[in-house]
Length: 342
Image (cartoon, rainbow, N blue to C red):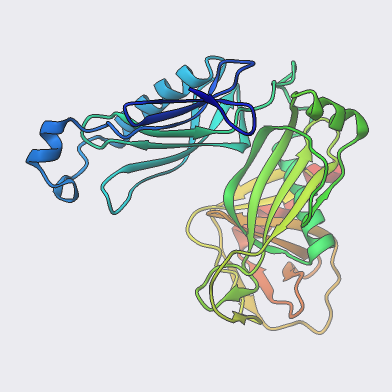
């Protein structure tokens, strides 16, 4: 047992290693080497063994391990469960409290596929949750704000969710390189004291400009205050690797299968409809800005109610004509927004 450079207790027993916070007694990371019995190691080739744990059982085990690490958590939200080339089950998840996740404090586990033994556990312990976990702002209102911020600061209006836009608990921290943060002094003080705030958080990929491997050239983390609607953080990332970028892709209004969802000033409507790509009209008089979503793809567009046309807010605009059912849904959304009976 030793004290490492950052003041943690490092314990090694029979090849297994754990790092413990001396103040709280919490284990931050665990690396196991004895997950297999000697009989299993001698008798079978590890590469020939196929996982027998169901996804449901993996989730049950991970929730048990998470509760042991942090008894106050309300479970896990799973981001990824997959099997690697060693046939180990790799899990990436977030702690959950109430309806909110802790998206900036990831939990990583590696599990033996036969016995369910924990081979590796690593996490960033979340901040203390705020006393109130009920947001004043709706997720539709927060999404409106997030898309307007991405359009204003980065010109990104055709987006896909890499991580779901959702209610979250985040720890305010001072800005670092590549980030734009607008936390208040009070929020920064709370973060410095280990306390979190209620917000909406999402991770988006710009789908207008793609690399040669099909990955978006730009990605963004957006954090919106769930109480006031203020933009708290907007972080810009460029994924590693990939070839030269390709741009000016033809946009055909095909956002994927599923119902279309429209958001206008914090109000939403869903409809099983279609939008047909059409040629640019002689004139276009935008009356509203709407978010169009389907199957994880999102688009900030302008709507000309007089002509019944949509237009992308891009360098080379694309125009779309909603079908009758979709136009009726948009008309109802606009009436609900204005309070007009017609």
